Length: 132
Image (tube, rainbow, N blue to C red; front, side):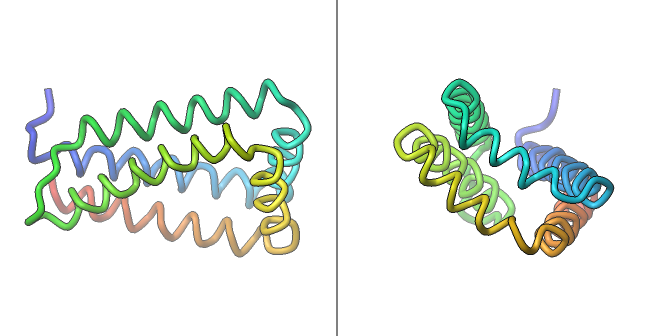
């Protein structure tokens, strides 16, 4: 069982691994993010599941993370969880329009977004490792 002080670091580690893995997948197979968003935009069931997963994971992160106003990583993880909850609600309420906007952002600069995701993943992993 993780110590309470380590929970933000564990969440940052797994979010970093997720971001790095997703970025490597996009760099290995360019255009996969745009294709995925296009599919989510076209299919109601996938949109509903995406909203449910994002909302559930965000709520879990928000509720599990011990908020400590003196710890910047704890604040960051709390904000990330709250942002995921908000994103899930937006997908439920405005799914097609929101995902159409997102796919427009990914359409021309997939590689840049993937590199930013990889960089964020590496930073989160390093921050987490420094906490252990």
